[in-house]
Length: 345
Ligand SMILES: Nc1nc2c(ncn2[C@@H]2O[C@H](COP(=O)(O)OP(=O)(O)OP(=O)(O)O)[C@@H](O)[C@H]2O)c(=O)[nH]1
Ligand SMILES: [Mg+2]
Image 1 (tube, rainbow, N blue to C red):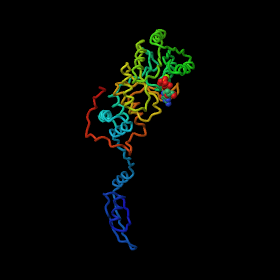
Image 2: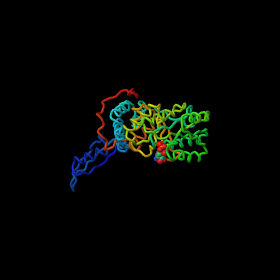
Image 3: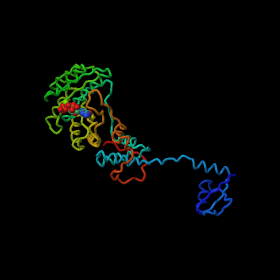
Image 4: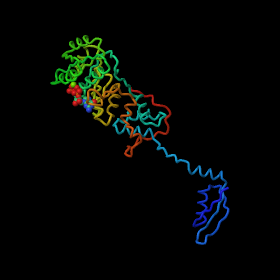
């Protein structure tokens, strides 16, 4: 048993102090009016009860974890990146059905359910030559050099062919890179010569074909590209920069799809902050994501894209919580029990 005295201005205050220090089990043993004013209360408590009060008082305070509304963070990110509303809705549905409190994982899984990711074999032999096609200035020539450099670093044999003989400096730009890497650059002007170059490179681990920039809305340009593709087994891969208008880029991608493109490499990802156009292009033109380029340097910044990597680009680590400026997310759903099964039509 412990005894303790408390002095306070009023009886109510003294009783409050008693309870705070000794707990509800304290017994009031004596009360007395003090001469100088106020009251003195003497209270007693069993040792066990005191220990319990002490334990409660010294218990560390658990900080309240801020609750993350995954659906809201994903909706906010999609809005910021300018993803068209119907597509955003589809992705939010897919993200909302997942049992995770990490918005990037939720978005990654949603992207995985809607898109296909088909990266280039890094360091492995490719069955078909790779023909880099796209609008002018998309980054095809730099990409050809990057792919060659990456394969060289992995001790793979590389063949580089350019068909960009029309534009002044088209060949010179690529030969500046290939010379540094000690790779012979083959220049061809027509589909027959291209077929011959493929035959010469038969057995090479990676054969890359750089092409001139084509206007996807010009029939003549696209016919030339089709003719080049008739030369052999090359796979045309679309090269498009990030950060261009979603609808324009989608029209371009659809035009390139009509000549056989099925996947796209996105360049200049380091120079863009909004990736909604990429989601729009891949969805509407039914293209797989492939690799991305995040640097203007030849020897670095070419990397395979996967759903979580894309989600991380769209929701950087420091933005996992919804921001003050979040737009009104669409009406919140009461409960979602299963992931969306929708895929690209
Ligand atoms: N920062 C950055 N710059 C890039 C990237 N990819 C390409 N570039 C730059 O974009 C510009 C155009 O690149 P090119 O490789 O010449 O483009 P292209 O598609 O071959 O152009 P054309 O042959 O004229 O059709 C160059 O200044 C490149 O350095 C990238 O991933 N990041
Ligand atoms: Mg070029």
